[in-house]
Length: 335
Image 1: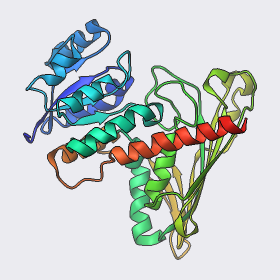
Image 2: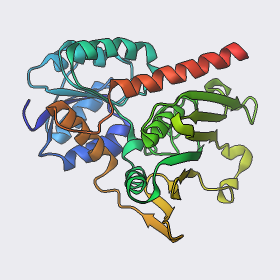
Image 3: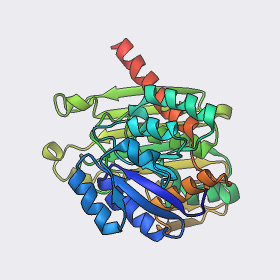
């Protein structure tokens, strides 16, 4: 594998425009985009002309091409999981931004292929590389000690098709337990560096009839970890039409982390407030540099090259998919 990985991009959209295209422009010494594909061929052609690569009308032709070293699947569009299957069939490493919780059956099949062939598969889990997360990990190792309790409050301000991906948005309008629920479950186990021994779910419909097609507008996810560690995650939709500007006085969404020697407050993606052992309070607004996209893609690159990396893998994606699947199944059985 060359040091400069030749990458095929599948699925253009806001993730490409706001996260990966800017990141790849900063990582030109590590990646070369050689081909783009989109369900709207005209859009792919315009993008290919702009960045100086080619496009293709055939997923098979593009992925099987010897000039493609690895594949980044960024949106499901019409083809869903199909490009992942094709890439693994041709032994091409995959960077996958499709949400794991929406593809549990596909992921189980993919896991068998990855385990048999050893081809790299890296799911996109951006909360792991938010500056506030990385700083929290440093503090847990140096000042705060082992985490004991996480209390999280997430509030989605509605679905914006053209908004930037982040803590208050969804990539596609879907059930809260899927997004951001699935990624937050993974984030908690990432912070605790342990597998939860028990996960429970409580859901509620605060405003009946509104967005009912996407399920409850409030979710409470509780996780218990070995040695007594606990996480409690509250996730809700904010209904602008009914509540107006109430968000201006409601508590700011964020995550309280209580550890052995202190506590921290995280306001994703880039703010952390923490206490030291002497009682001092430190309020840090962190620089998002390298960007979230750069960190994610560089982790993928290291994984492809077989170098040491903290990149998530197929087991992490499976945890999200199967946990959410089980939680939803239990909810249906009890209703």
